[in-house]
Amino acid sequence: MDKIASTLFGKTRQAVLAWLMQSPGEKYYVRELARLTGISPGTVKYELDNLAEADLVTRVKDGNRVVYQANTYSPVHEELRSIVSKTSGIPLAIGKVLNRFGKKIERAFIYGSMAKGTNQSRSDVDLLVVGEVPFATLVSSLAPLERAIRREINVRLIARQEFAEKLRKRDRFLSGLMKGPLIPVIGEAR
Picture 1 (cartoon, rainbow, N blue to C red):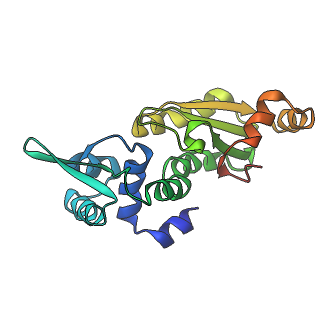
Picture 2: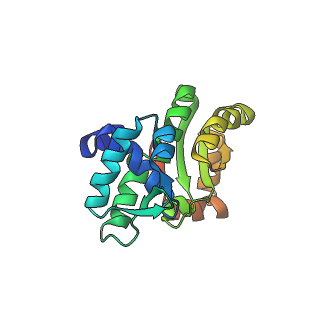
Picture 3: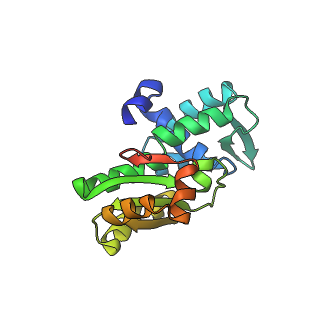
């Protein structure tokens, strides 16, 4: 996924869009986005101005300062949000954390409101992980990311054998989940 994002967008645009698109209703100051992305305020402002000129973000005066947010009325907003969420947003960040576990994780995917595209700025992230990792270790490794993205990550961990067994037996929860929209983080979702 990282290759797709870097082909479509430069590093700064990826970082800025990731924050704006994961929370379309949230407003950000330039310095706030610079702090969140680790990119200089001048570079972030340049990118925001370009995105505003393309009508992908809105720029609104808030007293002496200017705030930016995703333009949800842009004709390409939903498509752009979908591309960003799949390539350079939260899924990519979660994948970087989970990749530390190597082959202990067979697959992981996001489901729920984020996968459906109905998440709000404070929606949690529903994550299913199939593998052999201690639950407490998994949750604690995701904690710094939760603080960074300002969202709770609800982890559901299932051992490989249990996952296969539940699929075979057509477990109600798992069957419903697998029929719905999923964003792959590690491996194939289906």
